Amino acid sequence: MERTQPIAVFDSGLGGLTVLRALRGRLPHEDYFYFADTRFLPYGDRPESFLKERGVLIARALEKRGAKALVIACNTATAAAAEAIRAAIKLPVVALEPGVKPAVALTRSGVIGVLATTRTLHSERFQRLVGNHAAGHQVLAQACPGLAEAIEMRGAHSPEVAALLDEFVLPLAAAGADVVALGCTHYPWVAEAIARRLPAGTRLLDTGEAVARQLERLLAAGNLLGGGGGHLTVATSGAPASVGATVDRLWGQHLPVEHWEP
Ligand code: DGL
Image 1: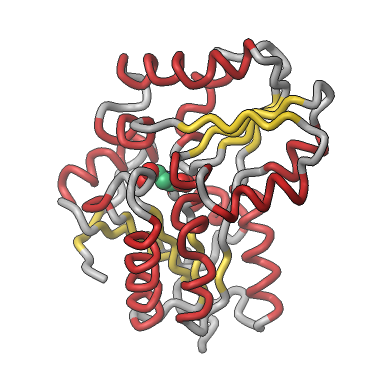
Image 2: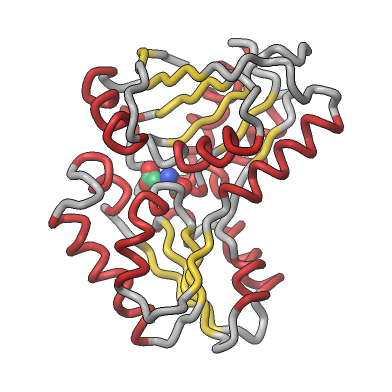
């Protein structure tokens, strides 16, 4: 493995760009290959067996394409497939999960909100996370079906997204949550709209920074840190033109998008 090889990052769509932003902030000189599996968006309503198979297929293809590390920038794919992916490839793998541990450290009311996909919240991995770290706390696990898809297809500021946020976020405020974990990488795109629906002072937790620190540690341990030129390639299993338009809107700057089939 060479230090000059890119870091692969994948998600069901463009939520993982919120993680990529944190990775590039911390490790700006690395090269990145970002893959949005748009053809299968949303992952959140798909069966675990499908996500496991798809996750392993993507991870193997990214390894073969020449990645030096893999970041699973998707809570849903992590919940369903992280263990299978780690077993299937030789690359260092960074996975992410809703910030239940930091939420427990921060809460004063003892009431924690978690916004995530249905698949993430129903996973064994999430149940274990809550069982191991949130004993004695009230965890409001709020599934948000349709939200990731609406952010991409309708736009972060669309009436559809606003209606879904009213439905999913207002009950957390009513129940007294003072910390809310954004347990899906799409949700940081609407963090301000979420914050507006919660009392002032409510903490929102995004895991991008923690993922970046973990990636840096793993690369350093494998003597794989540095060596790139800060280059970014964005690819999708969907239609590059329409995905590209959404990338430009969310990222706030034009990024070319190519087609890639794992
Ligand atoms: N961005 C993804 C996550 O972090 C999943 C969104 C979806 O495809 O349902 O869970």
